[in-house]
Image: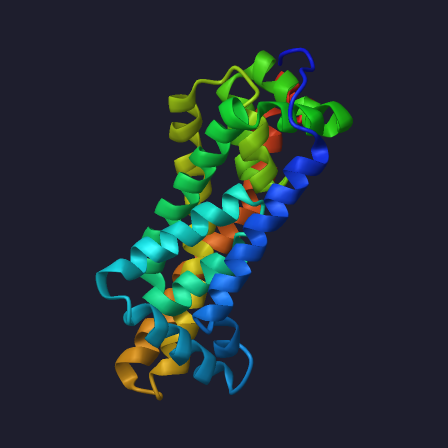
Length: 246
């Protein structure tokens, strides 16, 4: 990482971030998104969100992907968005659009951290010894450090995106490693939410019940896989000292 450089004052960056969030909240309120989530049963809320996205026609996936990108850039939690994707688009297409959105958002944050907001991200790293370990790990272990931090929740996902922009890992390597490492979690949560959609919206139809059980089974398999990954990582890379570094 480069030496500390002068950049915009911290309060200027804070004002910009707050302004962007405020604009997004105003837009969301204008379209009635908050009202959709306030009243009624869970089924009512899901149906209202479903109708809202369907009203966009072919632009619905584009809007959802845009929400993912904005969330990654603003360091907002991605799990609720993934769940909404499964509830609105179903298990399969929810997985597809969440995968596209999360990966584009991660790439955007990486590029912002590397070029547009480098001074700000360097400030985070300099104040946080834990985040410095990412840079140290990449210098010693290369792409394997990225794989470990993606597969095992050592560092928050959204902050990782920015911090990796400060390392010397190539952008193409970052994208190539991020995609497969994020996929198991994306499948697990979207298929779990997709099974809930079938149960909520089906009215108990036999075909929907079959889909619910199938999606739940697939989600369970990937949740088990996610629970086993930390142990596999520790066993595979402990001898290389990578786990201690992470």
